[in-house]
Length: 136
Image (cartoon, rainbow, N blue to C red; front, side):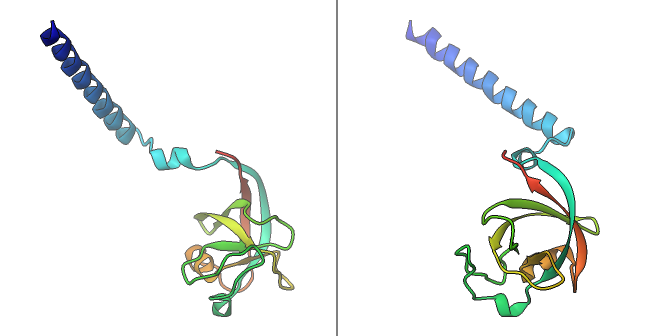
């Protein structure tokens, strides 16, 4: 009696594996990517003047408790709370980043870490599109 049960388990495992392979093939072919599904939806559409903090910010601890490194992708806002995530768009480049500081400078509503400014291609003070990243 054990032989039919073992055979049934092998058949079920094979069918499960086949289902996973077909599912992966379908999602890859039709552009459904797990990473994209994991991103939170955007909420609202706003613009803001932004500027980069510059290399002097590297190594400093922010008011939100983050030490800025050369690769830190973050935003400083005197209004938005620490940890809130925003989508930023500039010249076709899109980034999801968190508010990591409460600092400000005259003429800019948001400050970008050097790494974030490089990624977006922002130099000087520029107007960018942004939206809230809702809960996923």
